[in-house]
Length: 115
Image (cartoon, rainbow, N blue to C red; front, side):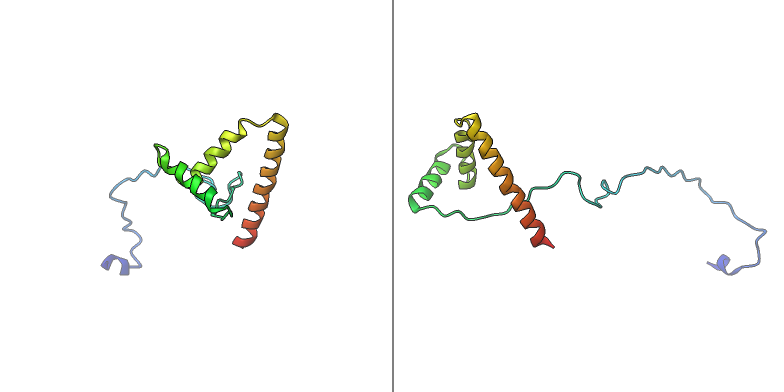
């Protein structure tokens, strides 16, 4: 600490005791967590869907009767996937377009709410 106060002794320049090698690598802002991803994220949030008590009971019973003890939401997703396999190509195309429009609406609504 005392060496810091000797301003006039430039002739006694000390070299560092150790040589230090520093490896530098560059990363993008995206890798560092800044900026937006190029792929748009589809928001997922909970919603309610009105069904009568019999439909609810049937879905809950199916979800508990399976070996995996799925949730009601997972069971509905499985039933939708199963039903989609039986659709005609024209009906499936219509379904895909409608789902795409609804997902786009959800993205826009989510962006507006998060601002």
